[in-house]
Structure formats: C-alpha cells, structure tokens
Length: 218
Image (tube, rainbow, N blue to C red; front, side, top):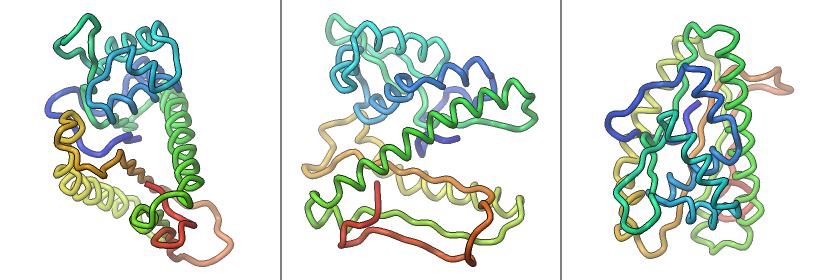
C-alpha cells in the first residue's frame, strides 16, 4: 500500500512491523496524514479545525503517529507544536510476512481503501458543480491486460519511478504555500493494480472525465 507518490529524503523504508501497521489502521490517523500531506505542517488545533475533531483527540493521535515514526515535530512559531510527515510515502513490504503481519496489513489496507474510494465518490458527486476547466481536467482510468507477476512488478517499478519524476515538480508546494498558483487546489492521485476478479467480458479500457462531468476523480 502506498498512500502518496514521492518520498521525503531519509526516513524509514517500507513498513513490515505489525505494531506500526496497526498504528495506521485508524480512520483519524489516516485523516491526519492526509491533513499533513495537504497542509505541509499543522498543529493539533489546525487538524481539529479541518477534521471536525476535538483538539485533545487529534493531539493524542498525532503523538501516536510520531511515536511510530510516521510524522515529526517542526520548529514552533507559537505556543503549539506543528507536525509534518516524516515521509510522503507510506509503503508496506509484504515479503515473507507471517500471519500476524498479514492481518495487520489487511487492517490498514481496508482503512486506506475505504478512505480513497469515499474520496473519489465525493469528488464525482461534486464534479457537476465544478467549473468547466476542472471537469475537463479530472479523470478516472481503468484497464485490464494479461501479465506475469514479474511483468507486473516491473511495471509497478517503472510507473512509480515515472510518477515520482512527474510529481516532483509540484512537491515543494506542499510546505511552501506561497508557491501555490492562484487557482491551484489539492489533487489526489490514487493507483492500484492486482489480479482481476472473473470478468463478464474481455479485456479493455474504461475511462471517465473530460468535459461531461460524468467520470473522473482526482
């Protein structure tokens, strides 16, 4: 599972510790990672304001995320401590996992996917009321092809590398609010691939978005 493309220099590698994985398997903590990914840095008060949660609850969950190495404090500019992501990527290494680790992966992946799909559905509902330029730019894409595990692994590595190159040009805007263009807004990218369930038809491509507002999500 990868929650965001790109990574901050340094930090830990892919997660395999079930204790750390379970620390992520909480909707408020995943929401806090989203806030920090969008805001760059944020205090517990700011997180509570954006999420509609209590400050004390956000403060607790932020400390849990910090204890497990997902976020880190930054220099204070007031009374309250701001936090930032330690890594822009939260990736899981499933190689050689035992049952306990796999159960932990399942728990955090379910939470992650629920958030991603809910986000996509919400954006699609909002899309009809968006300006034409946003309706044209937003998209969704699905395709089914035949691959071996080795080919899929190679494709994943190439896709990740290319996506990282493309997104690098925008990454400084996460922490530098002054560098964000006037009409910019947070854009979410989500990708996943795996064995397709039994299909009712042949392989092919389905795409949505681009002008009619019926498909697409960012």
